[in-house]
Length: 173
Image (cartoon, rainbow, N blue to C red; front, top):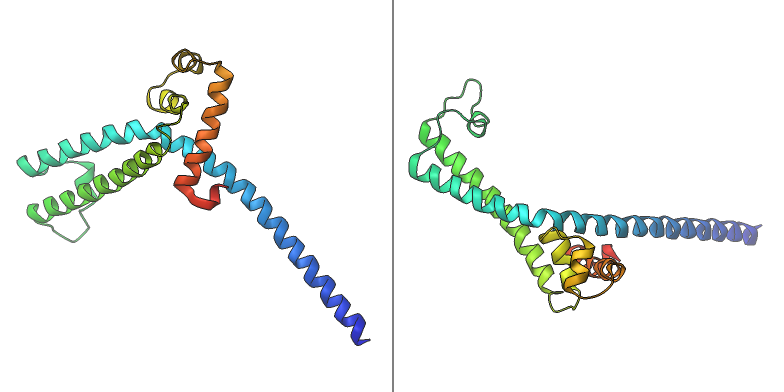
């Protein structure tokens, strides 16, 4: 009876381990696809983030030079019912908020730039830069590289997977 109980426990443990492994494999496959798509989203957003940083820096400079605007959605959120903030407190809060936003966006831009730097010497770098940074088609990139458009797509996929590992670590594998 004791030995059959041990076999039952061993079978249950083996079944649980196998279920855990299967769940891990499914999650890893999902993360890999998610990391690839997330990398593409970040690459598409990169030029926009750079524009936004420049625009936000101009707005911040204007606010610091001329003060906070009289009415703005960005100011309304600093107003609380029953709490009266001085114009100086509103200005300080607005400057602090914009500075934090710029810093977060700059961190994202720097992270993407560092990842792109890791692939810049690859002969098919133009497949990534052309698509995501310059808005070129695969046919236009194929003329520059020179190669077939399917080669552009295949090598862009390879480079995006490499960037995904750089950006997300082992989760992207």
